[in-house]
Length: 377
Ligand SMILES: *Cc1c(COP(=O)(O)O)cnc(C)c1O
Image 1 (cartoon, rainbow, N blue to C red):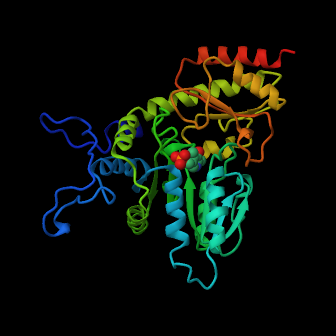
Image 2: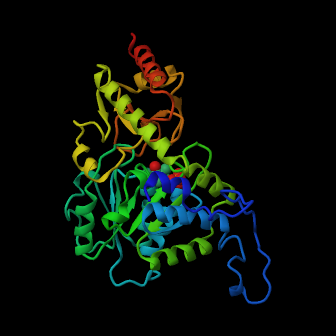
Image 3: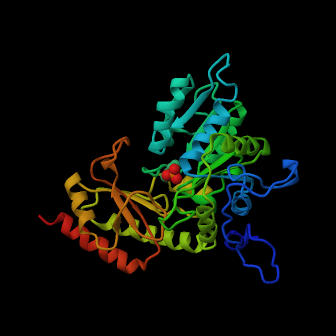
């Protein structure tokens, strides 16, 4: 089945007279349970929930593996790090080693620096653009990859990294948030984990926080499910149901968003006050060649640099339709001056823009007038 069909159908029960297409959220702390717990598929809401199970089936089909949902992208990331790196409970002869892009999602780097490194995990940072063939230290336990990276939109070659990592005995996890499994399927390239913040394009409406991990080997998803129940970062059934409902339009949303992103990037390149533009879909972009090889969609995120902090702020204030907000991937076109958060190696005038699903003519007109205002002396 093709992805555009899968997103509409996957994870929904077979037709049954008088039943809804997507069953509503099951709100349950405890389920009725007499006698042996194994006699029931459901007993306690921290362990399992039928609404999760439906969405996980859909995600598994899209990713080409088994999927586990979490209450946020960060919970998904923390869980992968925990089951892979802390497996031996600190009783290791040589500390496990995590190799991570120095330009990966700030929250993930912060987590590693503040919570995993102090436990004795050895951590090495490498820029995404240098993560090519085997270009990482010997003895890595897991290579964390984010392609395209957020917010700088560099890409790295998944097939090359995965085969080099596997040859040296390392696992590979891909943070696939910016691409979504429609844009790029890490497990098909041989990755061990595909990790996502479903808060972004997967759910796509700026209305919830969720995440998931898909893995090729059931042993990992078993551990992740156990870890989820033990550590307790479980998703609410309402959020999962909303995400499953939104999944049906993922292909429609993403194709419109990516077309809009391409148009916006092309327009920005033409404007003289824009110092540089990054979009993996631009034929002149350094990411284009590798991105074209491994991505079906180039994603909704465009980044560009204006001359200064004040020019970037004036641009954002002058936008009428492009909303100032953090995050990306939703039906609304949003933008922000990324350096307002700190933590990324970017200039003060760096703007990350996420293309929404509006009519591109309105968005281009808005960007044009805001750039005029921002650059007027
Ligand atoms: C947003 C994001 C995350 C974190 O996800 P949350 O759902 O906010 O916890 C992780 N990785 C990337 C690339 C992201 O953009």
